Image (tube, rainbow, N blue to C red; front, side, top):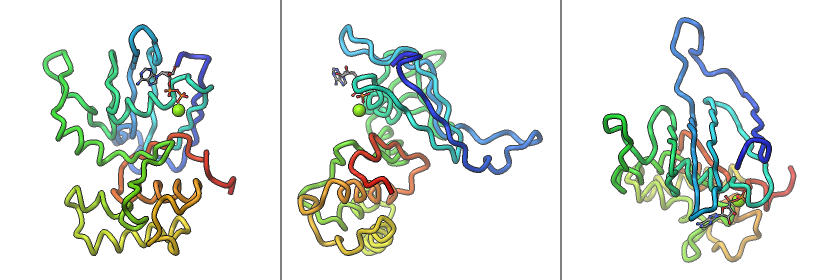
Length: 208
Ligand SMILES: Nc1ncnc2c1ncn2[C@@H]1O[C@H](COP(=O)(O)OP(=O)(O)O)[C@@H](O)[C@H]1O
Ligand SMILES: [Mg+2]
């Protein structure tokens, strides 16, 4: 991804509260600094900078193969950048400062960071052996945030929000692509992440 091949479109919601001359602005929701990523000799990300403020929606547009998914995967450290770094809500992701170098964090810490960054994958990655309800309830239980009953209650609320209350007991294979995508969105919301990354968010949805 290089300048010119991909566009970043910003839409600002309300200004961050407290963001006045007299107070320090909140840290960026997502800060990408000079990120380079290559696979072998294939350079995919070539010095990407991106700032997303709290409350902003940023759309990344570009042709197939231009590195959009790679950039999202770098943001939650599913891919390590060769150069550069990423912060989410002021916290470095996947690394910590060690003098003037960056050192990789341990996997457990990275998993905890990832639980604060929602990710709706292009192919949804739902658990095929779990019902829709359990797909949404699983992560809050696995991360120890909620007990099983509370998590299922939250999952019912979220499924209602995405219009799938009646599919709670279905399995992913019984749903259409758009319905699976809405389950994936509900699942991302269940951890109440500070940031959500959507890869091709409307690929399977009706326009409305
Ligand atoms: N794990 C990988 N190993 C090697 N090449 C990869 C890998 N992931 C992506 N690529 C290559 O990186 C480029 C960007 O891919 P991707 O980020 O998926 O593009 P987009 O999402 O914009 O369609 C493509 O040329 C793709 O083939
Ligand atoms: Mg992609």
